Length: 233
Image (tube, rainbow, N blue to C red; front, side, top):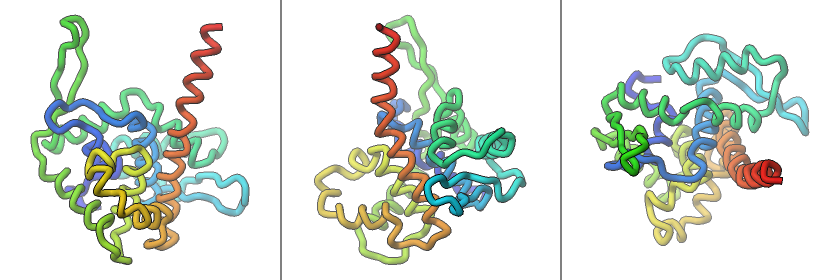
């Protein structure tokens, strides 16, 4: 990767953060970040999905060399050191549960001078970290890439943009970015992008990681509700 190129988890977080408040939007951003990390490792060919088993596709390490990203390196190490292989859905859930994941991704963007770390008081008692945007250029470029992919019928779309579109769609970030009314006529195009109709097999696994993220996001409320019910009984 070019040193100035953002990783998928960094791009997704820029879309999720409020530009001026620096607060996080989207109910499923954490699971989306987990999906973005898995997709990034697939795109960089650090991991692969063993498709020899029809019903149980497991992740395995393909390249043990370090990346230029601390979070990716940590996740790659987790996969390597695991006692048992696991599915992409399992790894996405594990990645999304990493402590202060969105803070860590935001701090990387601060190091790039795109965001700024601040503290915000809540009710004069609590404090929380926020990450307002100080350089809007990278997010604008991301949005323009997404716009070009969604609002055209071009068959040749850059693979990373296809994967980011699938991730943003999975966690509900496209509507606040473009508006529901503007997206409605492009429903079929979005469906085609998310299905991976405009890409090759190499990128299709990364799109599947995005789809796995939305599947995990869909069941998360039920898991939380079940846990709450068990604790209260």
